[in-house]
Image (cartoon, rainbow, N blue to C red; front, side, top):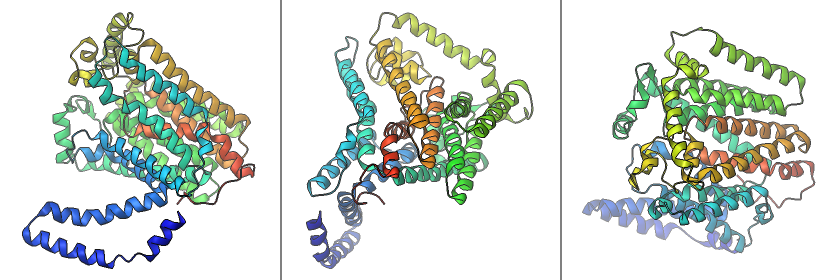
Length: 486
């Protein structure tokens, strides 16, 4: 790496700048717009590649940012096979890490030896063997496989590049900024209206049927749908409120409380009833993980207040969003819930003879592009039902066991092994947020969608590696010089 830096210092960019200006002038005079665009973009792209080769951490920050805004961007830019872009970027980042390491850069490869990566590899193997499922469609497997394999690679990237407590703080702070942007977009949708791209998406995808309702509009911000938006805002509300109790910086505590309150408002704007379980489940987990009597009592009172307000009163029922959220506490009166239960019953009768599922990518209406069959005609409307249909009861049990292991193992670390208070607070926040969206995933099929999937697996990696971060703070782990962080 030193050789690369020395060569960079001795290199003069001025000749290339002159050549670039000449080419740009020629392209503009001749009206060769593609050439003009290339002349403008290539220097920036080259600079970015060199930057990531020297500091792969910046590549991860780019990946995290792209993940959050990816779906929103696609509403305005028509890109065929757009998911390939994310796949290619992950591979590019892995190549940069290997080259960085070969050139003498410090990459903590020993961190790849962790429980979550091994568990993810087990899931990858199971997904691979789904190729041999008699009812599988190869095209569906090839198109959908990256949704599962990329998460394993993401665990590896997080383990290698986010090796310090400072990295956790920065990712959480970046997430808070993205959350505010998402809320701002939802507020624009509510008070100004949907723009042309959003209106086109509502019509093209027929999402107007589930978002423009007589009971009110369900706002979706930059997310794939209101269910994804609402659950993410619920997670953000939990994560940032808990963080505000543990951060040593007073200004940061107030800032995170501000973000949490706005995120809770975003949840209500989404009109996603199933997302109500996120703050409730997160609060319940917070009570279980905490040894501080004051926090336990406060959390229990808050949990009880939310339940009584929504389940036992009719306060502010004139507000459409609040009225809709209140129906989540009376599912037996909800026609949508009853339809979902009926669909699950129909699927259960079919899946009894499919212990390994119908095949990857062959669940729900999304699977119709690959094959028209019973499982692609019945909406799944749930992450776990979707997993069950694709991978069978065997795959569903494996998936749930993996998620529960991560939650319980990280809870054990938090309660008995983590000594630093601020780190413990960050891990508690992520554990509670993750638990909340795991519960919400029963009523909404969003857990593996952008940006939820990436955020969930980054959180899981932080949680499983919690003890190594604690060792850093207590001086038990000798870390290399700060070469791969901001």
